[in-house]
Length: 269
Length: 298
Ligand SMILES: Nc1ncnc2c1ncn2[C@@H]1O[C@H](COP(=O)(O)OP(=O)(O)O)[C@@H](O)[C@H]1O
Ligand SMILES: [Mg+2]
Image 1 (cartoon, each protein chain N blue to C red):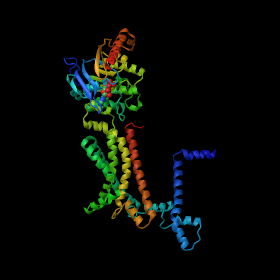
Image 2 (image 1 turned 120 degrees about the horizontal axis):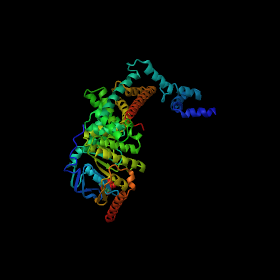
Image 3 (image 1 turned 90 degrees about the horizontal axis):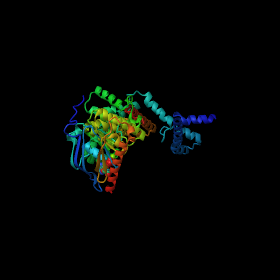
Image 4 (image 1 turned 180 degrees about the vertical axis):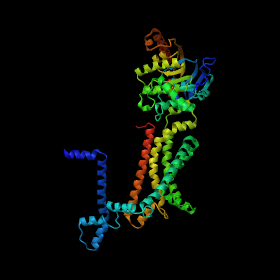
């Protein structure tokens, strides 16, 4: 049932954004949420978008997901228009909150996208088992969302986003609402998932350590108008664990990110 | 110590407070019967120069032929006579009349629920209907049902449509409104994030309806159905009031007031409220069953 994995690694980038602008027309004044965005993401990259709140991180992610239309500029996702990519279910989206349907149990929440992709009942069952075990939630199939902690719920929503094998995972501050201990654990878990599944990940955060720990590429943004200040590539071993946060290299990259953010702050105001 | 235990037993359980309340109501009722019936009785005493005591006044006012307010035991007797002692097919039987009222209110309830759901889907999915339909729906409910019911019954009667259909239509008229209001709110209740989630799967409108909007609206639907089912009984009874209704609790109320038989009126009233309460309870049970199935126990 695995669908033919499309255009992976070949000539076209996973995401290609050129001269993209997005302005929200509000009642009072237009909000320039995104201004002249240029970004290339290769298949298999783990890209973090980092910046102060209101700098357009969510908006950029939603543009990639075709949940928001750019005012001008071009964007392709896996070589297609963002719209076509959404129709082809090219990505799984993980929202800031778990966004589980309260009347469905955990298993059946994971079945939701599978039902719409036409998987048979037995395939749905098999896949939900597989992905629940991937996020270490075997045994919780019949529980309802309210019976799970916030961290567990967010893991369910990650399993749901992966369950239909999209090539790409778009995550909007998925661990923002969690305590630091849970967050550290989930960061390690996510890194392991990324290693195992080889997905392209775009990950929104406003935590520098989180961004540096997870990413192959860190996109630093600033607000008003929302734009990209700096793109920092990292080169940590794939099988890293949280201990690298003490390493020299880690601190150096963190410093770079911090400087980028500071720079954005000073010329923004 | 004993008194304290007795007290907490009465207040603490579920049966205790109910018993206390019912006893209080019955006592107030008896007192009210004396109060409301006394002026007629005292007139009669004075006309016939009868010396009267308070105990005589009380016992007379609880056993009048045509009291202003019949006392509970008189109503109980009437209920026993018309429910227990009569054949259920007899037009004197309250069971017979209840069946007439119940069948038209149930048909009206089902039609009203169906119409309400249909309209709410239209309103939520078609922007033009949202703007045009809602004002009319609200206006429809400002027309007093007592004014419109006889018109519907008479007009339909002149077209040869009599019996259950016109009555069911009045129940429908009352029922559809809470269903529309509740369902419109319910269908719109899913958060933006859940709608975005469905869009991220490029879900069709039909899928969004069945998998998101409809299940999210069920709690709202049940709240509306509880109101609607009680209204359906009211609608059926009101529809039976215009002249010519052969059966039903409404016809029963009417003939009771023609002949000044207040205990007959009260018996019909009590039957009607027992029916309504039972129906509301049944909807409540269904609601709980559905909530359990949906895992929403809180
Ligand atoms: N639907 C919208 N309508 C109007 N303004 C919006 C809308 N969505 C976001 N914005 C504005 O666009 C800017 C960027 O928002 P957002 O992308 O949510 O920032 P971030 O996720 O980085 O905190 C903010 O100023 C926000 O107020
Ligand atoms: Mg955001």
